[in-house]
Structure formats: structure tokens, C-alpha cells
Image (cartoon, rainbow, N blue to C red; front, side, top):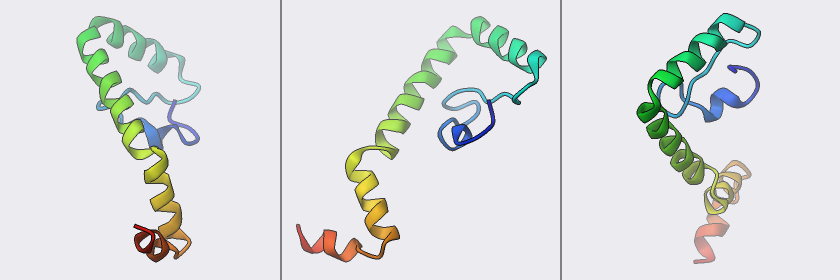
Length: 79
């Protein structure tokens, strides 16, 4: 659904489908659409898995945390 942190991870039409929370008809339509287009669903799943591996990898997270805390210079100096 399009609530919470899910839209930060799922890019509608690229890495999955976002559906309005509580809208049963939208959910039914999304499921029917997914079942009718399995090759596209597999491609979106693969794209989503790659995106998550890249954006949430430990080294990526460390760089982001260091940058946000103003410590990115320490990370560069240690290499």
C-alpha cells in the first residue's frame, strides 16, 4: 500500500505497485493486473531487489549516516 515507508522503497510501475490503503477495488485491480502480466511483474521484482541491495547495502548506509552526521571526512581519511 502507499502508506508508511513503503513508497520510499517501491517505485510504482518500476519496482512494484503502490495501491491506496483501504481501497479494496484498487487492490483487486492491481492483483488482476499483476496476474495478467507476469513477465513484467518478474522484471519489476528483479528491479526492486537490485534497488534495495544497492540503496540499503551496509557500505551505502554507512556513507549516508556519516554524511548526515558530518563525519564523512573521517570515512575518507580511513582509506
